[in-house]
Length: 279
Image (cartoon, rainbow, N blue to C red; front, side):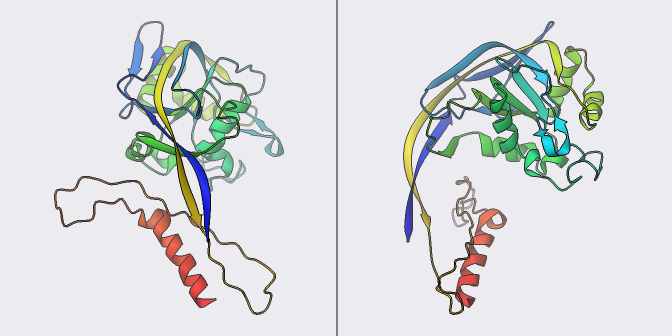
């Protein structure tokens, strides 16, 4: 069976889009790709922009009442840019008493951090990239977050999301913390302790413009069923994604140029087919 899925393809124009961090003594004009990556989830606007958004360091950007944790405690994020680390509190300190230590929870994923920043009313959200906590290098961030971005059609066209979502290289973040009179290592240590409070990055403001193309696309899910003999009216749902990361430009015309993503998705898809065959 095929299930039709309505999707949106959004592509940021690197030539006319910009993200800068303006400090008291200098401005960082962050080049899309090597310095930072940024997109918008707003699907109904070819241009999204803002000026003079104050930066606030919000630790790991986590609000988890069950863990007595609130990285946004006491701060009004309306109009501001949230700056945060990736992963969970407890990962870099290997503290198993905080969340799950080095086993990432959903709170540690970039998807959650952007969702929570939007709930807090932030204009923008920037995640500081570090290879070990992210589990991948900057090359993965750059390859994944530049070029066409696929998303489901959102009921409100993304109006409930921050205007900008992105990642920033660690070296630039370190310089910016210093310009704000902060030490990034001390801030990381503070963010890993219960009771952390957001810290204004005094003197730093973010202007940004995103020019994008937005195209409606139609994709589909592939669904197969195998009726069981013992409980034919019950269902066990197994899922895997079957996308890949596009094509490269190899020098050898006889070599496959598709980034097949064997570990990311092809292995899981093959496993589901094997399970179905042996059921």
